[in-house]
Length: 127
Image (tube, rainbow, N blue to C red; front, side, top):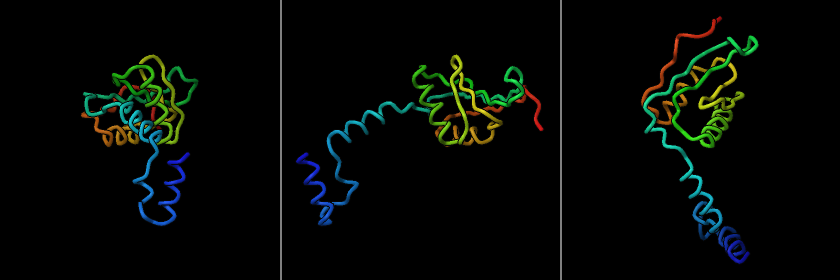
């Protein structure tokens, strides 16, 4: 509480910029989040596969080859949902994205630092 009052006082007087002042709770949560972030630069290859078969006629993009634990895959699916604006879920050790998102997800993984992103040509019918 005392820390918050001092922070508000310094902000009001313009003595310190807002981004430099962090409570100890904020610091630990930021540190935990950076430690939880997976290292995409160590991923050798990710395969993106477009499919329609077995999904009731709906198209999906299957993300294969991400060597993370199950909880990290859930976090990655959540991050992909937000970034690509689509539905995403984990099935086994793969992530399924709703729709044909091969090119957009390829750009996303390359931006994150994955060494090689392959779009598989085997799969469903494209319009």
